[in-house]
Amino acid sequence: MDRLRHRARPQNKLRICDDDQLRRRFEDAEQTAQRARFLAEANPDDEQVAQHAAQATSTLEEARAALDDTSDFLTFLALPRPVLEELISKHPPTEQQAAEGTVFNPDTFPAALIAAASFDGMTRDEADELLPTWPAADANLLWEAAWSVQQESRVDLGKD
Image (cartoon, rainbow, N blue to C red; front, side, top):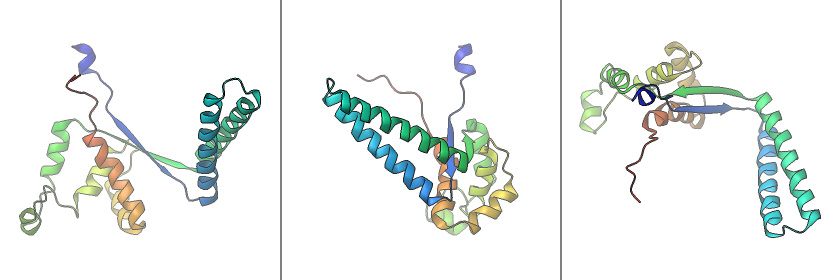
């Protein structure tokens, strides 16, 4: 039981990198390495194919290191259920939002959750600043990183 009481909370990491060239280099290297591994597995006796796979893997590791060095990361942790429920209750939907089936106020809750779930210490004011000023896709991913970790399950029913 002690082990169950002290489980690590799920976490999500959001990568933020504004260098499109580095991101494309990494994605290309990742695809090349994957294809090279498939070829090497399909041709286990071909030394040239194995060397190509090793080189592609090395190139991928270099691209990943370069991308990691240029990126910022935000980490979000799952909140204990009572904490999450209390946070949701502090941001009730408006009457109109509730009529539309919304459980929390989408205007106030996202920044509050981002701050509460932030492992890096992002404040509510910082989240309130970033959400409306970032492009919609980036702001949505920031929200999604904080919200999706709250929904993550690491248990199953054991059905075979």
